[in-house]
Length: 442
Image 1 (cartoon, rainbow, N blue to C red):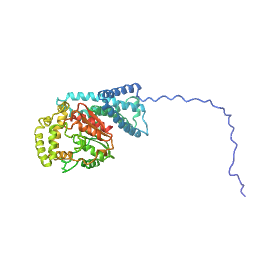
Image 2 (cartoon, helix red, strand yellow):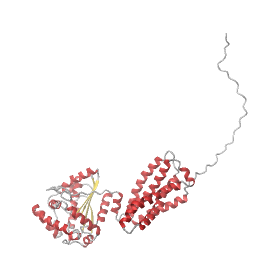
Image 3 (cartoon, one colour):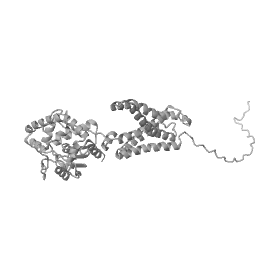
């Protein structure tokens, strides 16, 4: 019979020497990681970038402010994208700041200087110099200077941070963002007017031809209110849900109609030197109006058969002389000094020349139907207006007398009124753009 043994045998543990408490030794201080981005250099580059922005702010305060706001908004989105890309092995923040400031200062300053030098070496033809700078100088100079930061990264301690393709992408991207931030501010601030700065920044300006003008089809018998459907269709086609509306002269009543009938889509409306309804109470409609306009609306009151031949003759005369002297179109009108000054503005003259040819591209029917619509009921009531309305008119206006502006100001609910004590009927392209800028941003 086999002997039974226990399955587990426990042996006594060997003797241990007595334990003594050990003294606590603090860890050695950790050295701050040096990455080759001296604080003094960062401050110097930041100062240069700040001075560049301040320079453009001094030249065009409003335009530069618009540029700073919009460019910074875009910058935040792009920087966050690169930070997300860099999440697996985050780069030293000080180096990222250095990369941004390199693009915003060194790259910008040397790009401007070298491109100016490049243009001076090109033959005197201004167009050729511009093309050469855009097609050759800018790509070579700007991209080389932005890329030079990666070369800087390959020197000293900095090269230890370039250990993956992602690192290269992050540093290159942050440098490019710095350059683009300052460049966008410069472009927007260079606008000769606030409106031009906004257009440079991306303000969307949409215009259209009323029926019968330009290449649009005539709509016989149309009323002022009939423009509402056209504008709504244009906005739908362009994917624009909310928008401001402005109309000048004959466009003024049409702008009011759009605002009255599309209150859920129109944010604000401006009626600039627009006329009052022909059937307006307590208004002598023709009082103070230049005889040229009085005669024209007299033809309209006589009917299309009288109006159309007269306007056809006037249109042909306008086309015959507009290229030689655009101001000749208003030679028979007793314009105020303000309007005569604007007629001498090169931008206005060029706009008037181009607009005249476009206006009559398909005949005079747009002009005919406008005049007929203005001496008929508009098809809507001013009391329908429930959104913010601007009424703008000039005291010296001879084409649409100031009395029309005063009447509209008194009868449009809650209208904000702007009276130009010395202005007339006309405005330069820059003045119009500034009005549109104010309207869109209010």
